[in-house]
Image 1: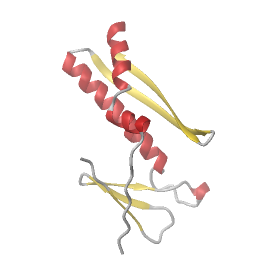
Image 2: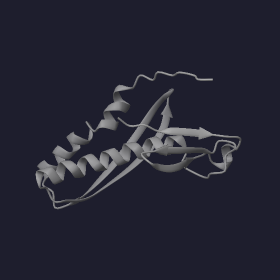
Image 3: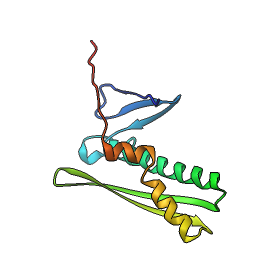
Image 4: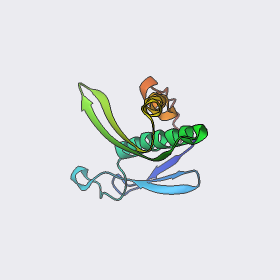
Length: 129
């Protein structure tokens, strides 16, 4: 189970995030009133998808003993008709057969974060005083 904690104070949009004993900053670009001090929320979302995609493919290939030496995942988020559209472009490096590449293309569609985004998630919110 993953957990994270986000805190924003009086500084516009700058949010400190802690997860897994590590820290990072989220912010908005200056054009939107932030200071560009960290990743935007959508950059963080895309980063999670990219990391999960890369990690899952590498783990799968390693388990199979396949010669996958690198995975590059480029992601883009846009809105179309009030719906989010994420474009994922994957480059696999290594002496992989066509069958191995086809199987990795199937595997990437079932990574945990991919499935969460495609299926949606229930979000239960509680306000504390």
